[in-house]
Image (cartoon, rainbow, N blue to C red; front, side):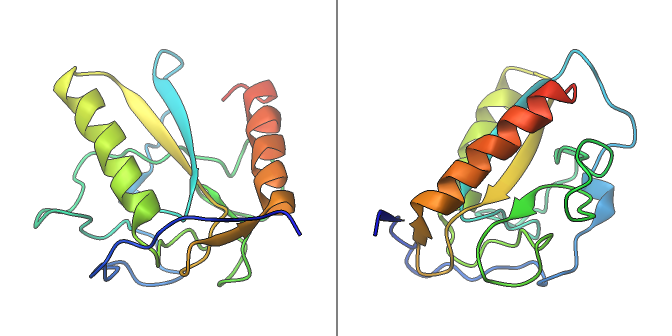
Length: 146
């Protein structure tokens, strides 16, 4: 009841390793003037999404101090794929959306952080409950100073 779906990206193969996040992609210092964007989608491939070059600038929002939810260094996984802190995109859609956002922000030389929230599984399926939990998390993160 109340299920949602997104189309998987044809030919997408994640480059990241499930459960293995490169913490160099998380800034060690919080910049209060940066733009923070929550991407509620299928996660993010922190390997080499849609390019031959990996991300070189720390771009993932540090969340371990915001909400004592699941000991995640960044982002959350509300699907049944992997651990609650495994944000690796197995679908491709979330990585594509993230790359579009970061490309525009980089082009305009904005300082930013992305909060990846995984609501859709590798088949692009998610539920209303999972989506509502994502919005709840964004609200809580915002009240925590994010």
